[in-house]
Length: 173
Image 1 (cartoon, rainbow, N blue to C red):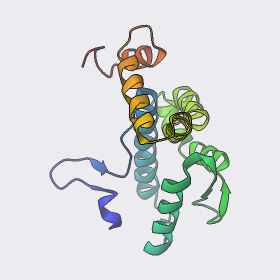
Image 2: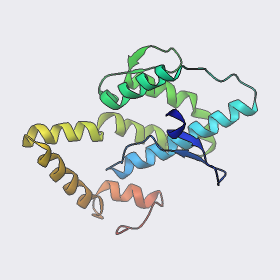
Image 3: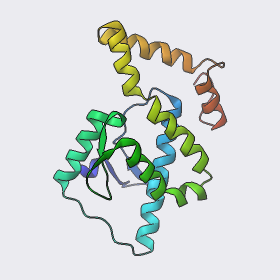
Image 4: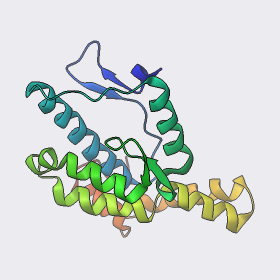
């Protein structure tokens, strides 16, 4: 049900976003947090300013969601403005443009551009497929996840530096 993907919290003045996968890369987690905050802020501004809300049939949203979960950044996505398939990179660029004012106001514009470029070029799906091909099975994917998780806590790893710089926690939890 769509209202479980993102909804107003019943007990807090927040929006719950439950559609994201578990991120194995701290930089991707940061990119998602920055992007979700900008999306919510943009939607709130549009509502306050009386801009019309695009209407979608639930079935069309489910198809777009399925396609995104199946192909991610490796193929075309449904462009939410044009409502047609477009290269994933173009859809993402359009999203960043749409939420640009909210990103700028939060001081996240440069951070979002850098982190989202990272997500496009090196994301969990591409890494998991490569590990599967190298190792020939799911065990290789799990081994790769374990290795990258251990590396993420290595102070010499750039992902660790990003987590520390963004104030998302200590190196060991």
